Amino acid sequence: MRTCVTRLTVRGYELDSFGHVNNAVYLQYSETAVWNFMKQSGLLDCVNEAGLFPVVMESTLRYVHELKMLDEVRIESKFSCTASKLTVEHHIINDATNQLSCKIKAKICLVTRDRIIHGIPDEVVNYLERETNDPETN
Image (cartoon, rainbow, N blue to C red):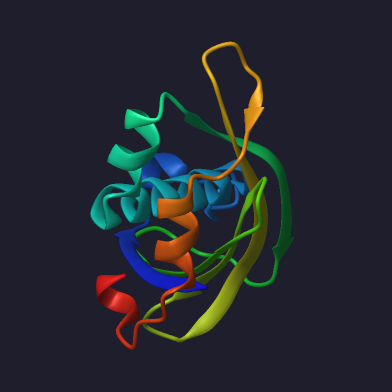
């Protein structure tokens, strides 16, 4: 399992009519964390070189506490995998109050251009199985 942290600030256009982050935006935050992790770790290059594309197959969200405009957000993500899918668990946290705002669990498959589910490349499995002590640097 690999962990990483992504940070961002809530923007005004992400709010609903009550001044809270819109529910769909939490999914965008989780996607941002996944893409940042894939790029920073080099896994995106590995997957692209294999002719594969990450596709979210399932997401489960649990809203816990609202986020508001200009809140600083910390997304703590844990990545693991099996032979056929990546699993990522996100905790979206208000950095100032340390309050959990949303939990998301997503299952990601890698597919070919023909949209056929492919196994996870060994390089990806090996990278995710290596432990690190610093979640800020993947």
